[in-house]
Length: 454
Figure: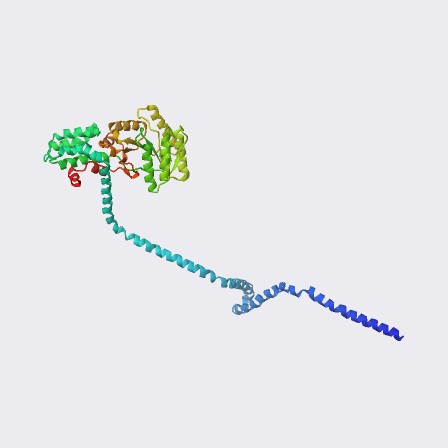
């Protein structure tokens, strides 16, 4: 029995110990799954409670003033307080943003103040402009001197001016019969019959009235008449009336059309204009090569076709290309043709019609290039080209190579065509925009001034 009690006691002890042992791990299992660590989800509730705690505080203040509508402000006040609390946190960031923006605005104001400061001194040079007049006059004198040199052959003894000058040499009084001698000089200098009559009509009448007593007055009268004739034409450079302005250059063989185009491109490029060259002379391979050389030298794009290609198609493509790249001017070369060949002149008409299809109003300028050394033949060319095409201007080349510079007076008087440019040399700057006063001064300078210069 004692052993039985002992065994029972031992079993009870083991059971108690086992119960206690099993009960201890159960407790940590309860703590881990209890997951008090997930309580961060519950802080939301206290977070809501905290503002609630704060809300009643302001509620009590307004609640003291409006006692009856305490219930209504209670619902309104929390709404008013919530936005008050929400902007509170960005309030810390808000001052940072304006702090950055304000200095940004201040420097923006400074340059605005600086601009007028830069503009004000720009107004000061305005009174200095009067000083530019002497500079312009000096530049004009240089231009006249340049023309004088270019018209050296005209001013020689055997030239137009030199022969007129010889009529008055050593004469203190002017005989009315001198008009006949002047007429001979003018006619043999390719001035033309009509132009000679215009020049001498008033001089003859003035001499009959004895109003021109000396050589200086006769020279003044002759120069005034020449200026009237040359001023009648609206010349002097290209008229860029469209974008792009299409300029077609025409003339007989050998007058210098391609060279004139190259010089014009050089001048326009120097003025900041974008120029496209159209190699419309497809019958002379050398013309395309020559134009390519000018294009590379000046920095202009050249549009050309194959040998014998349709000139109208080449010029059409050049106009389209100019429109695509936004060029300012298209200079279109054409094949030289005799003015007496009606079939070739008809071909030019077709080219102009093709150009008008590429761009309305094209060509805007049709320049006729004439060789001054051709004399009266140049005047015939002007007449026939004028009948076939709407010539808008004349380019008179090679004036430095002839003693008969009076042809320019005949072209302006008889055909009423404006002179755009005159060529007095091989350089690009030797193609001068025509100025009537400067030209007359260079060609018909007084003998006294000439002697003084000598």
